[in-house]
Structure formats: C-alpha cells, structure tokens
Length: 423
Image (tube, rainbow, N blue to C red; front, top):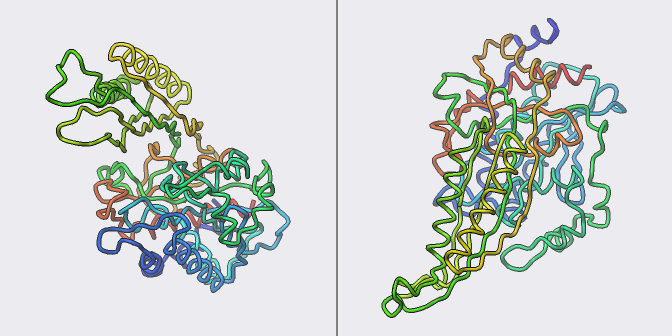
C-alpha cells in the first residue's frame, strides 16, 4: 500500500452507523421476523431486498445492472474504465431462520467503500464493482453459489432448467417469470482476465477471531463442499410383529452410515475437514412402524481436494458394506464436488499491510464455510476478509457481529481495493 493510501485512511474511515443503517433496512425484508431472518432466493422478501440495495447503490452514484441469473452489479466508475475492474460484494439471501449479517455484511461493506471514496473525492483507475451474487445459500434449489457458479461456467441454461425447488419450479422458469433475460444465459460466464481481482468481506463463522482477540481474519483457503442426497430403502413392517433378526430397518442402516461419516471426518489427515448430515426424513415416521425409507443429506468439506475425494471414496465403500450386511438398498445422488480455493498471495499481502496501517489486529485463517469467492477464483485472483462474530454463531437468529468490527474490516477492505484499483 502506498503512503498516500495510508494518509487518506487517516481522514476518512468506515462508518459503523452507515453499516448498521443498511443492514437493519435490508433485514426488514424478512419472511420470519418472529424468529430470525429468512430471505430465500426469489421470494417476495428477497426480491424486495434486491430492489432496496439497487436503489441505495444508485444513490451512491453507481450504475446498476443484472445478468441473466440475477447477479447484481453496482459499478463505481474509475478514470480508466476499459481496464479490468476490481470486484467486492457477497450475497443477500439467507438460510431459514438465520441472522442479519451472513453475506449482507459483505455487500454493505462494499457500498461503504464507495461512500468513502466519494467523501474523500478519491479517484481510482479501475472500475470498482459491488456484486450481489445470486443465491449463495443452497436453500431453494439444493445447490449453492448459483450466481457465481454460472459466472465460472459451471451452471448452464440447460442445467438451470433441471434444478427444481420443492414446488416443482425450475430455476430457469423462475428466472424467466421474473423477467430476467434468460435468452442471454450464455453471456453470464466470466473469462479469465475480465476481472482484475475480487475481495469479499464476510463474518467469521468459527469464533476463532473472537477467541484470539483479532479484528480481522485474512483467509488462506476456502474449503469446498461435496453435497449428496442419500436414500436408504429397507422394508417397512410392524414394530412389534417383526423380530430383531427379521428386520430390514432403513433408519438403523442410515444411522450406521451417519456414524461412519462422522468417523471418517474425525480421522481425516487434512488441515481442515468437516462432515455433516443436516437434513433427514424418516418414512413413515410412526411410533410403531419400522422405517422402510430414510432420506438424508451429506455435506463434506475440505481444504484439500484430494483428501476430500478420498474421504468420499471411503464413505461409498462403507455404504456398500452396510447395504450388503443389512439387506437395504442405497441410492447416492451427487449435486456438486467443488475445488477448494487458495487465496491470492499478493492480495493477502495487501490485506496484511492494510491491517498494519489501520492498526487492526489480524491473523490468517481457513474458511470452513464456502463462499462465492470460491467460484469467482476460477476466473480471477480472490481473497477474503473475515470480521469476528459472537461465539462464531451463524445461520441462526443468534448470529451477531458488532457494527464497529464490520467498520474496522471495511477500512482494511477499502485500502486493499484502492490499491488494487490503482494498479
């Protein structure tokens, strides 16, 4: 970072009040105000939140447009707009009964950087683009990072037509009904060189920063998920009339698979591995009936792609053994098998310098959660800034990050984006 950049930051700082104002206003658009924040992709609250943020971007002098999958781009013009731009931003959709910070903090931090630039009358060479990525959360269509996935060329129009929500609506049809230019879906992918760099601010979802007393985490690696649906089919029968020896119990088989998954996750030699079953449906779910079918999700994440694939192979072997021994059938459907993203060393160095200039305590960290930056990294150098969350709680009504901490992270983000935009 230049000395000029450091001096500028002494005069204009991120405003915690502005950040609070935007976050609280976005949170008004919420389908479960009685219990947390729920803003699922393309529901009325999510569409209203989009319109609110686009309007706020316009007030900041940004030119706003959307692509065929609904990614929103707020462009703050540089003096040399033909140069590849610098991106920042995150998402505004949530899981069910979540909080008001996950994703949204990164969007408003980008907007606050633009406000700071305007307040300081600071010019930059490259355009600065604040992006709202479509549906980072896999809530509606069972696949996360829809917008950034399409940007990375990993979600086509034909694939979008095969992604269905629980009501039977395809992603492609929902986009068309909302007026998005689905006929231009082929124009969504971004090619290498078209974006100079991208830096995303996000809340820490582990609690590590709070425990360490650090205000910023500089992310080294974004872990990538492999997501599956598993369906175990046994034989439904009477709980009292079927002896223990005669049973073909789908739930007991599913439980054994779950324990095998947990053991594999704990035994992993990777730097960071998680293995989770977050959703389970037992059929017929009656007190006096041996379950004949169980459906559940599997979420495996790792900072190392090869380690993740080895774990998946071992899990499939365990499933095969359990299936044969218990006399059940098991169907496994894979939704995605993404690559972990290693953040750009040059941008990480700029973030570190920005922390020192702003006297913000920091540490390097790994993101166990996936983010849109994981897929943006397919076509541009990326990095992430984490800010502390209370007890590391996220995806919960108890999710909380102090607005002052987001402001401190935004100061670091601003210095880094300015340095990149002026290269």
